[in-house]
Length: 157
Image (cartoon, rainbow, N blue to C red; front, side, top):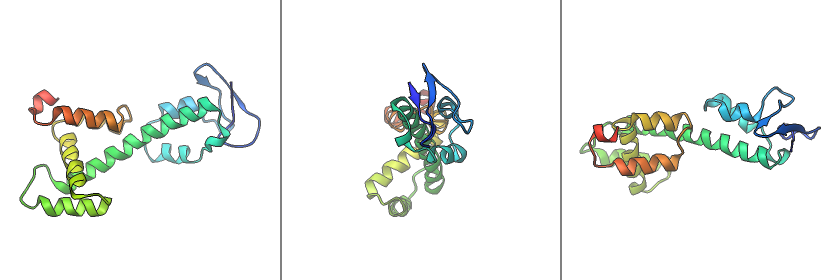
């Protein structure tokens, strides 16, 4: 299976099994999949043209980008948790409306984001860490939050 190096129209870089040979710039798809999510990884991934990859390379790129998406969502949820505070207050409506405006959401959708943020920062910090590290997808995280809503913090943990 041939893997074109990062969208550059040069000779393809060969791949064997699940381990990709090194691309000309020293970066491999295997390395990208293991890379900790964050700004550096995003910069590298952003520079990869999927048109220059074979199907295995495209799938690896999708996987690496999804890991980055989990990191971005975790970071966003952390900010929402700080903005909204730990506990609902009488002033929650204005916080919800501010978040709704900032994120271009309905009030109900913003309230759901606040709920998820509070759960992740409160009773589900382990889930938040897994999301931030890219080990959990956003969908899995939302399913965990839904299942743990209304249960004690110790049971949720």
